[in-house]
Image 1 (cartoon, rainbow, N blue to C red):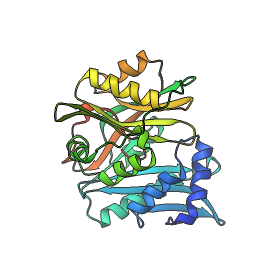
Image 2 (image 1 turned 30 degrees about the vertical axis):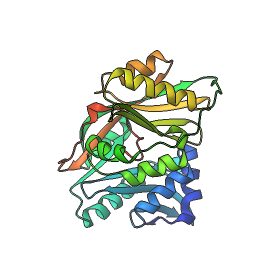
Image 3 (image 1 turned 180 degrees about the vertical axis):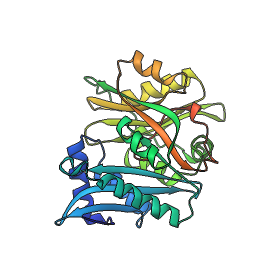
Image 4 (image 1 turned 90 degrees about the vertical axis):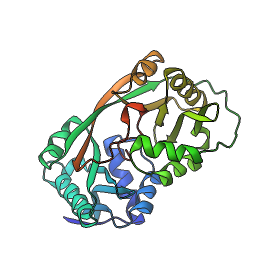
Length: 277
């Protein structure tokens, strides 16, 4: 087995692995990683085939994200996932990044804990299966410049390149709520391979959170919708539950190093997703 830097030519191999795992990412998601961190994405290769991946994104040198740690089911249990994670950690350590973060499944949490990651807060994925009401929407441009400043406070670091990419790919899901001149909430979304995915979803009060959620659902035309709710937020879970969502799986936000910029996760109804934070 060889662990090496990932290239765009490896995206089909990454897509094969995520399909085997039933994940929702698209080739565009892989491109986001490779564009942001061309030297920070890795594959495990065996006999010319990609059998595992890991990827990183650095957010403003405040902290980095580790995502897309996935291994071919036929090669699990032999340390490949650990090797890919260690390669990502070594890369980030070489850059002097003070903190690394990831979202862990219950199974992954055990491995990450052994490697020095500690729990920060809890997340739950909720899923809605439905027959969508295909009403459509009025295609209007949304000013998101002010959102970038607010999101930096909420998330803990600047991720405007990621948010701009989301808005460009799915402008119908870029939503901004205002009360007077002030932003009271915002939401973005992605069209995944199997479901539309809401996130980030942020609101200053329950009424705004509900309006953003309902607008997203009105604009989505997919039968399946995912949202990864922050359990410390008082509105997210009751709102999605009231609209027919069902809990799918738990996740734990974890960090390794000095977490100097935790942001304000209690104001986030939902994260972007476990791959991006």
